[in-house]
Image 1: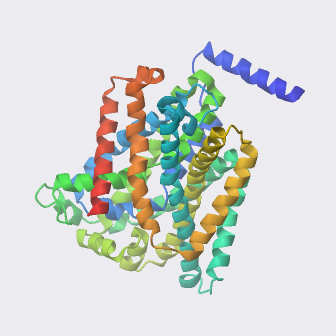
Image 2 (image 1 turned 60 degrees about the horizontal axis):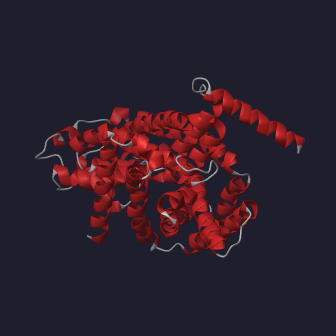
Length: 437
């Protein structure tokens, strides 16, 4: 008890000191969170980005490079500011939503938040099982155990990290970032001798799209790919709450710096990998890769007959899936807990967070295991339906709150707000067009 009082007093004194001086210097915890944000965003989807982005030709690729940072940074900064605008210092996104939009809207948006993230968690459970199973069969020439056993072992391994709490999750993701980035950059550098100029033939409005679309149509359909390749909204709420607890009134400034560092790292590493892959292949090769529905690493291994890439592909995919699973778990848990807490409050009851977290972990473990064992094809459809919801929560909701909420009025009148709304509308409309088309 005495120790708790001392720690609380020390933290109070520390925050009081911050309020009277300049923003605190960069800390190790900031670096850990920066890498954690990167780890959540850059997952297995980056292995398909060179195909989806490169199909449009060189001109859209250059435009995507130019808008990648502002698109990613301003949208996630807006969501972070939204979480920080809540009156309750420990309140996560589900509580802030209810504070800004009322009880009913809060319940609806909390459900949508959970619905948008939870299916992605299930997809990662399926993906990691398929990746390891394929690696055992094709690379190690080993007969894998029955799928229900293999999936259980893999998901329990990921949930063990989850069991140690939020700080361990973020640290695990920050550690996994290093082998992932090294492997990704290693492949990109390895491909440099294979670079050719065939992609430069598409550097015009008339001949830039090997997929047959015009420039604006290509950009319209590619922006959602960009949005979801760099999306790390599931971890933003936990990030904002942790930094507000650490930095008090300087939380927004510190969060913006950490986000900027993470997003610069994302854009530089991912686009170097994308451009290296695109320059090493022809436009026709990218079309073939799209038709075969395989990752860019699998296609490169088959195309150049390179055993190193063939072995590297499943390892990189495994690391990417593992760390993205951890980041998305925080968001899925937050949404699920929010639904339970709101339902309990409606009945005049309170739920202990510690017990709820244990129940949520068990729920996630069992359901992810079942879906990973069954390996249903419907997951792709569910994930596509969740796409517009993610775009709405990430791009539209914070901008609407800025326009309507007094606690966010200081962010009004910025040109970046209009940019975020525009990208959000484009992303939502393009996803719906692709899904319905």
